[in-house]
Length: 110
Image 1 (cartoon, rainbow, N blue to C red):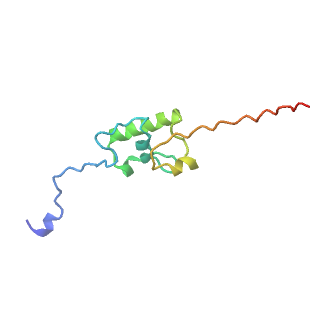
Image 2 (cartoon, rainbow, N blue to C red):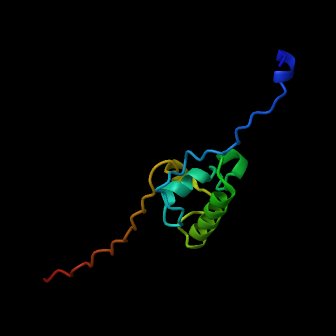
Image 3 (tube, rainbow, N blue to C red):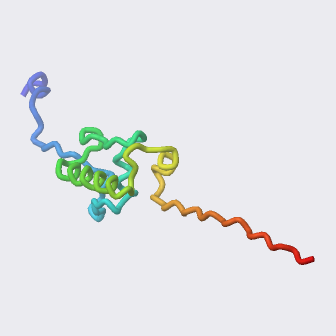
């Protein structure tokens, strides 16, 4: 074949999307928040499939898991400042703050 004809010949290799963010052992679940944070933008939007290089089945499972986590209030619908700072870190629960009751004043005896 001439060189000019070889340029337009398609390769026989199939084009396959790679998913570097999801390993074979990872489970796509609403409880796996460290994995779900990788597929959410800073505004809280789900990253589309063409950007994150997932297969169709993986993208559907990720979307369902994110929506379930939002409903159970594990993930925010819109990211606020505490979640933006910890977006790349593993999800940690925020400790609840207990209010201290004011001390009761004792009357002095005369």
